[in-house]
Length: 312
Image 1: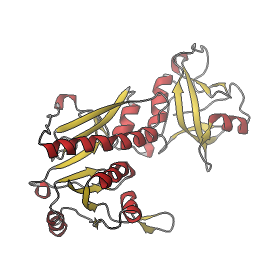
Image 2: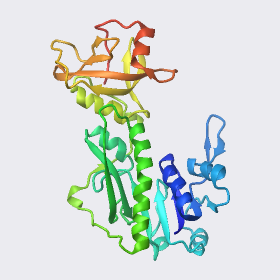
Image 3: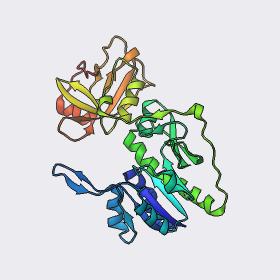
């Protein structure tokens, strides 16, 4: 099939690479280059960088507004059979989409977790599974017809970065499946149940907290959902560190009479939480340093049993 691909973030890359191997991608649209780093030098999006490195022969567009008449005309002149949109960052207008078969890959099992941060929202809520959905584009965000879904379990120590990378890879097969059905004339859409909609708001630095008086499961969800960015911040020995990966020790005996945040076993990273539950911290990042395994951090700091991590 002749395709136009719209995408900007790393989540789009596995599908873009797959489509360039199996279809005729006649155009790629991404966000404009933006200032990045301390020097403010203009930098292309991950998709833009990939195209320059791997497919410079494909027509690349970087519009400030994809809905402008000039760019819309260029895209229509490419006479594509389908448009594939993944983490593009601009809303395609109804006028631009008129008469076009356009699909979007979204990292949740819609209608659960519409919005900006579906992967973080699923982990934060303690969901046992999430997945990908391929939908048509609609006026309302993530509200199009569902053309396909594929579920994926969420591991007990899986972070949002882990899950992001896994869903990005798995999403390419789902997109290929829908394109195949469209080509065969068998694609079907399912209307989303508005009564089951949940919203995944954008995550910010204001969310980077944890309360150890909550259960270890709630602490685990928060730490893993916010890893690697912004990263849950706690105080240790009057300095700030980030906790980047954890697991709730649901199979271990509870530890009564321990103050929340107390480090019960420094080498193993066991921390007391609410209700006598235990959290195993697996990765941490001291201020100004790289992320490291908790065991390395504990040895370097010579942490003793009974010292505390202080949360919100």
